[in-house]
Every structure is written in C-alpha cells, then in structure tokens.
Image (tube, rainbow, N blue to C red):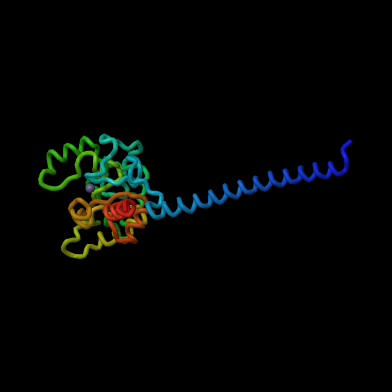
Length: 249
Ligand SMILES: [Zn+2]
C-alpha cells in the first residue's frame, strides 16, 4: 500500500500534469484564434487595398481587364454563356446581337428603363459580341486608320460590351456624341448605367485609356465595379493602373 504522503505527491503530480495539458491546449487555441484574427485582418486589409474581390485576369471574369498589354490568356477565348439580347428592349429585331447572359439581362433592364425615361426613345445596338476571328477581320478591313482593339484584346470578344446609338420614337437616329452639345441620352447613361453594371470604358483619350474616346462603347463590369468607377470618376484603365502602381510600390 502506498503511504498517504506518496498518495498526495502522486495526486499533486497528476493534477499538475492535467492543468499543464489544459493550459497548453488553451494556449494553442488562443494562438490559433489570434492567428486567424490576424490572418483575417491582413487579408481584409490586403483585399481592400488591392481589389475588392475583382478578378482582372481570368478570361471569363466579368472584370477581365483588356488592353494591348493585358490580352486574353487564350487569344481565341469564346464565352460559354452567350445569349441573344432581348430585342423587345432594343431597336434590334433580328436578335443577332449576343452578350454573356448576365450582361444581356442587365442590358435589357437598363434599356427598358432608358426607354421609359425618354418616352419611347430607345437604345440601339450596333455591335455586341464579336469573335476573335471577326475582330481580326475588322482590323484587316476597317481599322487601319482608326485605332481598333487588336485581336485578343477586345471587350467585344469578352461578350461584355455593346456599341450604342439612339433610335427615337419618331425613328430618327441619334449618337451619344458628347463633343459638341450636352447630350441628354449620354447624360442619362452616365448617371444610371453603373446601377445596371455598365461603364463607358474609353472616356479620357489614348493617354489615359489607350484608346480614343468612344462614347458609344459601354462595357458590363458588374454593379460594384461600375459604381466604384462612377464614384471615383475614373475609367477602368485609370483604376486598374492606380491599383497596380500602388501594389508595385
Ligand atoms: Zn465597342
């Protein structure tokens, strides 16, 4: 039989061991928890500092950034979810113009609101999705004198861009030209397009956007990026370059 003194020593050793184990387990949990908090803080800071959840690189991303230096990874990329644009909301009755599904639905929504705001004057699409092959054809046929997007760099190939004119309720045609007079149609798009996820990509000329001003060209970038660009009064190229310059500092 163990003496009572020995029992006390053994019990004390056992409880010391048990408390030590408990303490270590708690410590590890705390370290893990504070590590998680630290990770969350860093990643939140990083994503806010860099891009709030935008993917500028993947070909199929709604925010794929495209210019001569940032082409499609696959130059013959074809979107997998192209659908005809609902012609009830445009002057196009042939339904030959296509966009990616989300952009097509958002465009129809915007076009309906536009028609409502102007008592029947409608947005008219003159170009939407263009394949890499067709872009190449355009470059060879038409774009020698004006600056067209080179093959593998066009927002039209992404299935996210439309070129727009206006057809009034009296069947007269208007452009979105903003060089001479204030243009009420352009002003409406400028104020409202972002709430439907659309952005006028080329507004500030070659030095800023890498292309001439194209008031007719509207690109779906998703509501949160379009709203952010509208709030900052920046073009997509300006915002993209700002982000990249900050990250590479
Ligand atoms: Zn265009």
